[in-house]
Image (cartoon, rainbow, N blue to C red):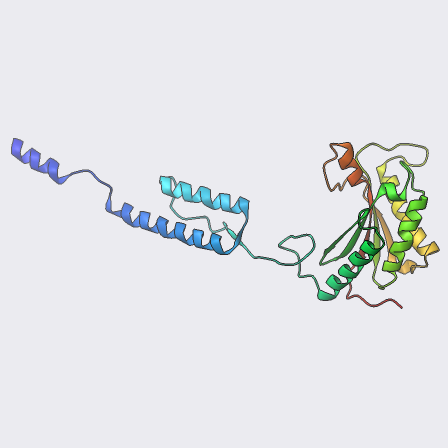
Length: 247
């Protein structure tokens, strides 16, 4: 009887079950596949982390071994200019050409250090700091502001597209005899620029509109004096509508 028990123990020796070898091979192939994709493409960090977590779960035996169907690691590369968002539409060539002309004119007039210029598929954005156009807490255009707008009007008159003037403030509460809040101040500043372009520089008023956003669309956190100065601005947005040359 003792001998029979010994033989039985030998037959039931340890080691991994047979299916584990196949499972390990599958995981190795999946890992190789994702490494190959990674080497060929740009990667979304958050989605890559999701995929990595799924792989870890699979290797640890806590899950079913397959990646979630909704996990997508590879994003399409986009070489377009502008905001850099991979979901942006392709920027039309004529819009890029107009952007380059405006950028060159700003440089020639030595305005490129005080006025930012950006582009995306929707149009061209001219970013003007409020200190160039206005005194603190005011919507009256100062002398340096008129000089700036005179030069920008020349750019705007080169096309016949719609133009939106947008006013923004920082998050410091505004309350005086003229303006009850930053809503009123930002809107009044946008309207002041609109009226100057229309009444003083003869830009067709049917092309113009004004918007005020108050402190609610900052470009940087309102956590320092420098950042608040960045957020106090007026944007002149020249919308893309298949640019037509101005008369």
